[in-house]
Length: 304
Image 1 (spheres, rainbow, N blue to C red):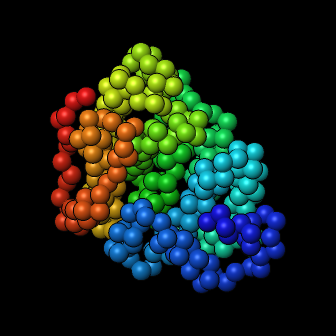
Image 2: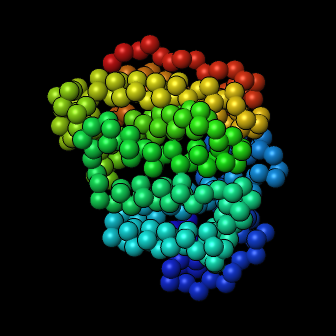
């Protein structure tokens, strides 16, 4: 994505894209990444697929501008430009292909600009806030870094009841914490420590020891994975709401989050000596379960 800045960044003079071209660009971007998108795309109704792609492309660009430049000053400048394009997109004025497509998505499904802007606020926060005092501070971050994505997808599914939003928020927060558990070492190399300081203090380890994986770190990580599991389980009833494509997607992402946590447990809560990932076979199995409606098992009993 970053290579595209040369022709559709803030210093370029990109002509306005046609709507079909803009959606084609978003779909190409979505398919170029390894996430579970390729699986969910297979069961999405044809009329929804382009809009799913435009939302994904927006999130992909936002994430890359925040994390892939290795330059917080430049990231802040580009995120400010991106936020300006979002504001213009809400009025149908942006020339950027992602926002040409996203404007149509927002109009078609009456999507508010708020969750899109909330996501950006979290990415901006990442450029200056590198640690959190307690769970409450981290959960506040999750309300902007993760939960807006679920609320946007609820809008596509036209399933935005207060209860559905509560379940969705719980799932998204659980997925975010599961990813934090998985990416401890990577985040540490970026100088970010999402594990709250109160948990470090309880585990009697420092941020440096946490980033390096000291002897006490696996026990602290185990407790953190339990928090993630609780959030995912609390939101699981959402898989019984909305259209079939939505129910399958919820089952897939809840199952994927639980699979990450199970794999961490099977690795004795060691995410430092080797990366913990969901295997290709596990992804296929999760997709089959999502289609059949088979719930993911509650999790491993392995202790640190």
